[in-house]
Image 1 (cartoon, rainbow, N blue to C red):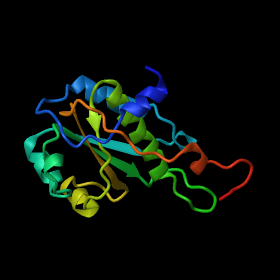
Image 2 (cartoon, rainbow, N blue to C red):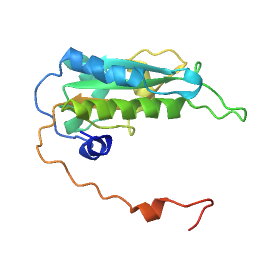
Image 3 (tube, rainbow, N blue to C red):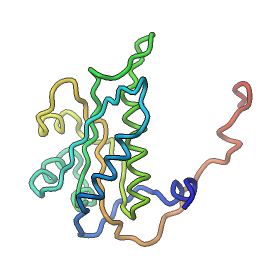
Length: 172
């Protein structure tokens, strides 16, 4: 499958089969993140894989949606601001680096027939406390992962290429 076809195949899955995800597949998804690019190759990320019902339930307290609770696993994506590259003007690239890693993970998962969803509207402070994280780590996203229960890929409404591109300078 071409990269463009894979990217079109990937979508935010919010309905999972009640089937555990094999550890080997989770490790392959994390490997995709591990090899992703980061500013100055600092790799300011850490991933916590949550698979037990007890911990999934506790993490779900930070994002109380029924569909989220039904995911067989959740990858808690953390950024390490103490080890991320900062541009001369102070811009911290941690969130950017982590976003690239998550994108690699979502595409790797889709390539293996797994579904994922970026979840950012969660209680980050509560999640931080539940996981007993050190101060330098920030939970940036929660990524439920599992086998999609729906067979049909929803159509994504996208802007046209002409709406998102300018040549040489910004044009409205």
